[in-house]
Image 1 (cartoon, one colour):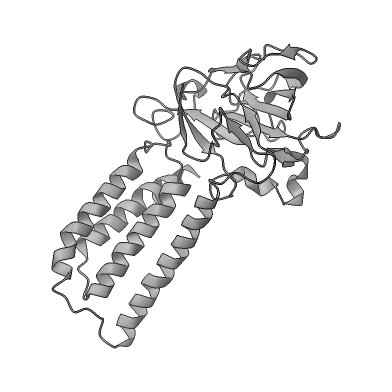
Image 2 (tube, helix red, strand yellow):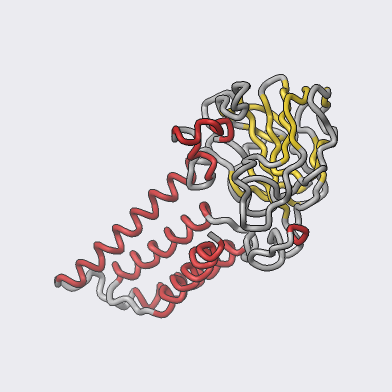
Length: 314
């Protein structure tokens, strides 16, 4: 996963920008299609990429500035070229390939953008559960391209965890705009969010809690305890799960009445997680045997629907 992030968000965009700048087109149509193809690729990776792993959140802005500068610098020379390609197989094939790739990437952009639209299901209004810092959403939204949790919505093999379909995963950013120094530190303490206090996002009572799962070593998830250490709250509008807590950090027990803003625990790396983050989702009450199988409910935090790469400064 992490090597693929470096390739898709670093190597490929830089390679495309160098190609845009360095390979001279033979006609105006090729210049236009090449420029649009690079823009489509940047658009897709901007929306679907995880902009906090090694490359900071502001990296896509740099890519777009470079794309615009290259487009302007190459526009003038392109106007001196023939308008249309020669009528031979390879020239027509190249135009066809440019068009197909641009169309495919445009579909990906559209699908990712649709994930920014909240589902029509009842929205649950919560307070943001973290304070004192700049946070970023790793998974969030209503399309699988920007939230891996969406695969649990329809696939039967995930039925026991269907309640997490609209979940939001949150990391914390350091001053450079990444969630930790390096690509994948093994020490959980090196992640900016590790140990951050978690505050109740709603008022209600504790219906389930677990506090004894160990922290996993990144990126080795503990699939025997999927939620790891967690607190499950029954609030007025929904059941709300806060998961992957630090071992022994939960400050509440089953039956406790909870007020909005009350401390619940601390962010850890327990359960099915590749690295420290806070998982939070809302759902209808689940069954007694599998409490996380309730119908999923989308969430707004302080009135804001959070999707991948959204930043929140508290």
